[in-house]
Image 1 (cartoon, rainbow, N blue to C red):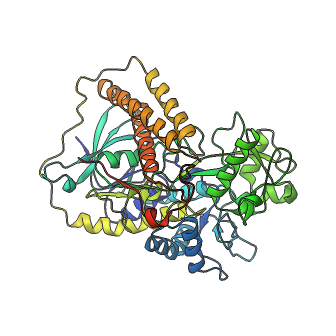
Image 2 (cartoon, rainbow, N blue to C red):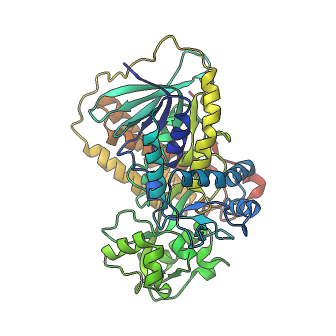
Length: 529
């Protein structure tokens, strides 16, 4: 028998939990998550939430900063909605018990990050995402209508194919692989993708292992429109250490006066941008990449030593302790850093209420392309987006749900066909490594047509191998994730190949200039069903 709920949420980060909490007032909610329920990109967010909370700040200034960072591709309506509804969503978080840093006066301790013209980042030390996740999970535990299904991996969306027109095929839920190996149907009146990003498509990433682009891949296979996948944000500063896996060195360090230096001690960012180390992320990441290529060095250095131990241990306790664990004392020595894949600015196309082009399917948070980020996300707008759109989607989803006719028959159960246990799992690990390496080398911070063509040819072969493997052997979580990163990698290459200019996060040596005449538009893809 299938699992039945009013709302099905795939993902347990800030967007998914915000939606679940509000939706539980209107019906039953299932939250599916691949690992433990607290394992998401949100939990690893260090910097904070950008919001206009100071009397010296303004909505207009936050909107303008976002538009400038987005390099002409932000949708102004999405930016205005996010910025103007942000403070109320932050206050709700505080009411739920989220603990943010405050001054003795009781006012929020607001910090500043790259691209922002004012101090407007609310934070909880340097583990803001973890605190937001904790507060939301605790609130969800108090809600009687929310059921969590951890260690459960969605395989594909279930569509109602009874209508002759494919664009009318409604999403009915998802097939999901449970921890015990069984594949079951999760049916819902409304299905919400809150699956986060796809950093694991690249060799070096700040993202956790769960970030394999599942939502984008599933939505694309179901016929949803996907856009702007060429704009993948590389965080300029990930800790460079052989044993440090994916540890992010927050942009807030540069916001507090950190200086980027070469091995010999010279600074270099002033040669690339008037804002120096506080330039937007795409500029800083490209500058570091260029300096590493020019010098042959394996990393650059972020110098915080002039700020003193007392300030660093109070403001950045988690980063300080983690660096210390790797024998790096940031109070007396610079931190070795390299760029790493960090944030997916494109995704599943939605309207301002999270609706996708597939009836019954919503997308919120990093998996979605709302138009907020354009060609480059402004620092700390991501947690804000998850809060705002998680809240907005509930109202229209509930209205849509109330108008649905009752279904008389269930979609078919999962058919494993003649699939057998795999005797060659090495195919999965080999293909996984190859995809991530070719994406890093050919579709990274700096691109060319030739590199993109090489990546496309390899990916076409790899996708064929993976498809063959998927249909012949029993489904495992590793195979699900491999299939999805191959799909997302191909979408990134496809979008990047189409955009014949450099803009925001997409920089190509073949077209180094921005072309507003031809390319001031989104790159939209959809699969013909």
